[in-house]
Image (cartoon, rainbow, N blue to C red; front, side, top):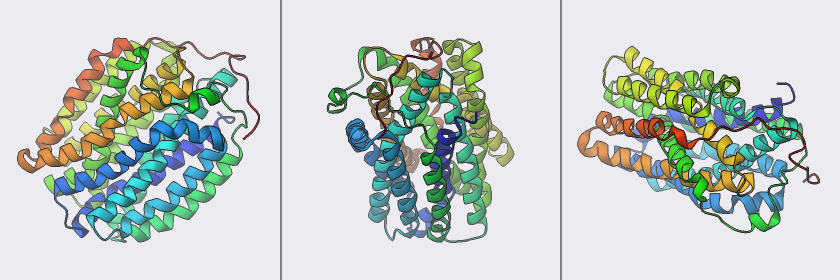
Length: 389
């Protein structure tokens, strides 16, 4: 646990920064007088930035160095996200989120590759715990954001207040990361972009579905509670907080579960609980019941994406970083497509019905769980560290 603390902290801080923004989306929507569809297109900016940068992220990491990439991208990300609170129009918000998404793309590949490298070098499972700390960060960030929203402090001032603390903590954490580099990230592979190979097709569909659910609840839960259920600004932030809390519990238990249960069985439980939770959250109007539904869905979706990341990194056809990057690019299409689609559909069907459309994604996770092959625990000697960055 102690040796993994720096990488856990990086995942945690990344999530805290992003989750601080989520409870403020309704306030920004109101300030800019955006419709659901217009907000959806603005939110697509982050996904588009992510999607464009992911194909070249391997090469950027190779020329910059893994640890240095994590530090630089973290600082830029934390320093940029407050600009979303000062955006004066929809196009300006889109532009800010596009740049934020570009930073997130590099971080997504860098920190997951680093976690996989540490697993292989140490022989200890840490990937799911890393994502558990990410989920814990979303809980903390969502609560902080809800408090600022409840105090009626402007979004820009709120995010600008939090940023320096995140930058300082990230600098300290990255300084204590192991200096080894993943040998799989060869120069030959990072100069090229690879579509997912045949062994990743099923995993990509599962990851796409998991991120469609997770990203949609991130972006729309507060708006749903605020606009459909007329919840207060503080209460609106609790929807994602409930989802993220149980997601954290699931992910913190994930590495233990990986050691005791078959991955396919775990993934089927993920899909089943996600279906149940989403059905409850978007079929009832009482706030307490809706929050319970979010909590059940969070538990269900908790380890789906980490399980897929581990499976992709464990495929022997290509380097782990290449598989993680190609899988991330395809799965992040969910973040690209879902926010505007939910906004557009809600214009004629209502936001509740648009969000009920997430249930088929949960069913896909359940049906395709057999695509995840069991991954053996990493053993020492499987990786040869490169020189420090």
